Amino acid sequence: MRVVTRMLAVLVVLALAAGAAYAGCGAKDTLQGTLKSVDADNNMVVVVGEDGKEVKLTMTKSTAVKDAEGNKAEVSKLVGKQVEVVSEHAKIDSITLMA
Image (cartoon, rainbow, N blue to C red; front, side):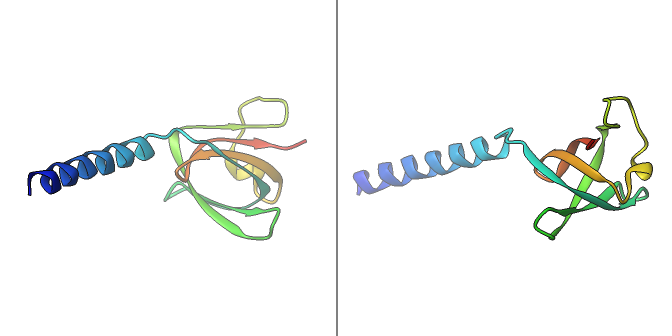
């Protein structure tokens, strides 16, 4: 009985550690496609990827929006244009106009 209890405890600890590691994994996703729309009220954008699928992403206060030269830009002016979006867990780090 003690062995089973210890094994169960070890499994619980491993499961919690794996969940914590995933939550803060820091993996960045890069999406290239056409910026279809911007919902400024809800801080959402829709990007149509090169595969034709729509992806909804959330802008944050720290989201950087840049033109092709790396200068600050307004996201609403990029609608209909080719962009590269870097995000983590659907939260946008940056949106950059592609040249």
